[in-house]
Structure formats: C-alpha cells, structure tokens
Amino acid sequence: MEVFEAVRTVLAVRAYQARPIPADALRRIIESAWLTGNSINGQPWHFIVVENRDTLKQLAVLARTGPYIVQAPLAVVVAMEQSRYAVSDASRAIQSMILTAWAEGIGSNWVGFQNLAPVKPLLGIPDELEVIAILPFGYPVRKLGKGRKKRKPLAQVAHRERFGTPFA
Amino acid sequence: MEVFEAVRTVLAVRAYQARPIPADALRRIIESAWLTGNSINGQPWHFIVVENRDTLKQLAVLARTGPYIVQAPLAVVVAMEQSRYAVSDASRAIQSMILTAWAEGIGSNWVGFQNLAPVKPLLGIPDELEVIAILPFGYPVRKLGKGRKKRKPLAQVAHRERFGTPFA
Image (tube, rainbow over all chains, first blue to last red; front, side):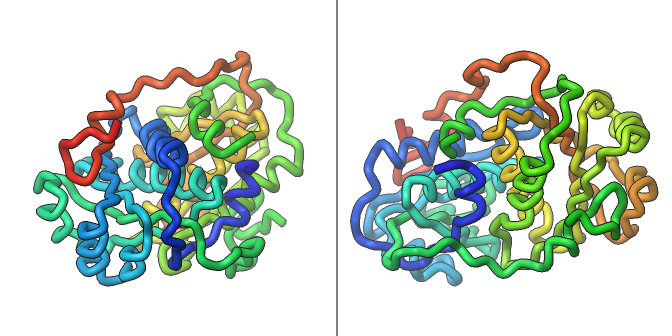
C-alpha cells in the first residue's frame, strides 16, 4: 500500500479476529519501529512483543482504556527512557508501526498515556523506563471502509506563509 | 512506495535541489499531517507552509541547527497547542509527512526542539502555541541509496514476552 494511501485510510481498530499475525508481518512491524528516525539517534525506546494469552489478559485489565487488548493475537508494549526527546521519538516509532501494519491489512490502536506503570512488573520492565503505549495488533473483525475521519477543516490547521492565511 | 519500504529506507536529507515541489505532492504532504491519528482527536496542531524565499532565509538563520533550510524550495513549520498529548500527536503528524514525502522522492529532516520561539513573530504564530519543528522539503541533491541506518542491535530494543528476552 502506498504511504499516502495508508495515512489517509488508517483507522483505529478495536475489534480483532483471532487469526494470528504471520511472523514476517510481525517482523516488519517491529523493524519499522526499530528503524524509525529519531532525535540525535538516541533510540530511547523498547518494544516488547506479547503473544502469551495470559499476559494479554492481564494487559487488558491493567490498561483501563484498552479492554479489547484481550482479543488481539498480539500486542506491542512500548517503553522509553525518560529523556528529552523520548515522547517524540517513541510517538514516531508508534506511527511507523501502525502504518506498516495497516499496509498489511492489520489494525491497531494506541492504548495508553494513562498510568501504565503497573505494566512494568508484569513484563519485567526496569523501573526507570516509562510505558507510553500498548498497541494491540490484529486483523479487523469488520471489513473497513476508506477511513472517514472527523477532522477540523483543513483551512483551520494548514496555513500559507503566515498563520491565519488558509493553505487550501 | 510501500509503507515498510518507506520506513526502512527513509534518510535525513539536508541538501536539496532548487527544483520546486509539485502542488499535488505538497497537498498530499499537508493532508497526511492533517489526517494523522491523534489522541482523543484533539488535533492540537498547526502547519504553516512557507515558500517565500525571504522567509525561508530568515527561518534558516533563526533555526540554528538548520542552515540548510535556505536551500529548500519550501518548509513546513509545525506549531502546537500546549496540551498533554501535543508533542506526541505532532510527532506522529511529522512522521506521516516525512514518510509521505519520501514516497514521492522528496527528502526532509526534522529541524527543531531547540528554542524555535523566535519563529513565532516572523510567521504570526500566536504566542500561546509552541513551535516544535521546521521541516524543509526538497528533492535530494544526491541520489540516495537504500538507507543504511546506524541502529542499536535489534535484540537490544526488541523483546519477546518479557523485557530482556530478545525478540530476534
């Protein structure tokens, strides 16, 4: 799938088929995080792939906004060092993973930002790292359309030469 | 270009041809930012497209780490509200733009994070917003290869089931 087509159509997916994610697709998802551009090449990130059913169940309980994690065949937990650019770098890596997965027909959604600290002992994540996201991945239950997104009018966020002069 | 291919090969580009960016490619770059997934659909972002040569010259001076902005046919200045998820959301939008551009053969690099506040009066950006990045866009001067990236070994950042058990 073309990059722009992926960005344009990708939707948050919160209901997954039990069908497993093929190993080569998972490898591409993880490599896309690993290879993402980041500030001064600090790579302040960690990606923990969880496929164990019991662990997925516990993640679904711990992440209060993500009970649907329990349905997913796998989840990637993203932890980061507490450094200046870590939120930005990790967010870019997450975006890379979501787009790479979508191009393979695999859906996801960013679960997180609320307190994910209880996930750390479950996965043996060192206490000095912070968990920024849990990304469940799975084939969508419903055939998804073209991705109708609710967005502010383009002219409200895109400007030409100076703030306030609409781009469009 | 396939999404994974774009993520895998994209490089920071800091030397641009004078050749202009076609309007339709620019439109896709801006739309890819606008359409990016973001937290609770807050869309706390603004994108200012700068093509004016004098303004680009001034941006190149103001952004101390980005003197090469002066060569670019255009730059997108990214400003954000100072809200909880803004850094994360804006970083995802920036990643979408960089990948969309790369798929069109257009290079970029994230200039910023140092103090970009002086850019605000130049572009009429309201004081309550923060400038997170300037992204110059242009066709690379040099034909770029496959993107050899220096990264930590995959096993150091990707784990299986528990932190410390290498994924690979």
